[in-house]
Image (cartoon, rainbow, N blue to C red; front, side, top):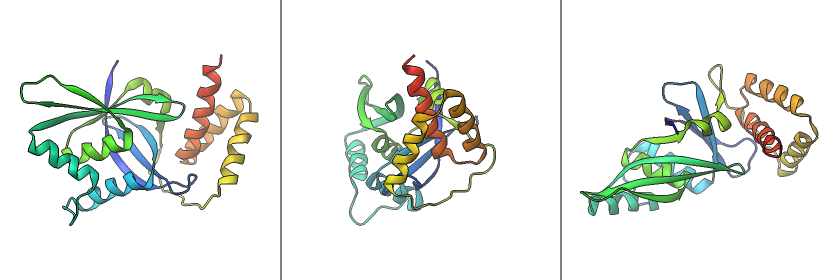
Length: 198
C-alpha cells in the first residue's frame, strides 16, 4: 500500500465537538486534507510546541518521551496513521536503536503526532485512508467558530441517518463547497457506514 506524507496545516477548536479540537493534516504535494478530532490535553501539547518550540519550565509527557529517546540513543523514524475504524484513526510510531531492528509501537494518533513534531520525524498515512477520509478544500479555509450544544450535534447525526445515499452525496458536495470540512467528514462517515453494510 502506498504511503502519503502529511504535514500539519492547522489546529483549531472544533465547531461541533465541545472541548475538542480539529487537527488538520495536509497531503504533501497534493490537495487532500485529513481532519482528526483530538482531545484538549494533546491539542495543548501540540499547540505549545508549534507556537513556541521552547522548552517549558516543567516538561510535558511528550517532552519526557523525547528526553528518554535522546538519552538512550533511540531514533523515532516515522509516524504512520494506519487504520480508520468506526471514525477513529489508529497510528504507530517506528523507532530503533543503533544497529537494532526497527520496532513498531502502537499509539493514539494525537500522541504519535505530538511525538513526531518534537522528534522532527515525518508523518504518513496510507493512500486508501486519504481516499476514504480525506477532503479537498477548493479555497483557503476560514474557520467558523460555533458553540453548538450536544443535542444539536445528535440531531444533525439523526437527520443524516434518514437521508438517501444520493442526498448524502449531494449534501457532502455542498459542505465541501461551503468549506465546512467537519460537516463533510460526518457525512462521509455516514456514507462509508452505509456502503460497508452492502
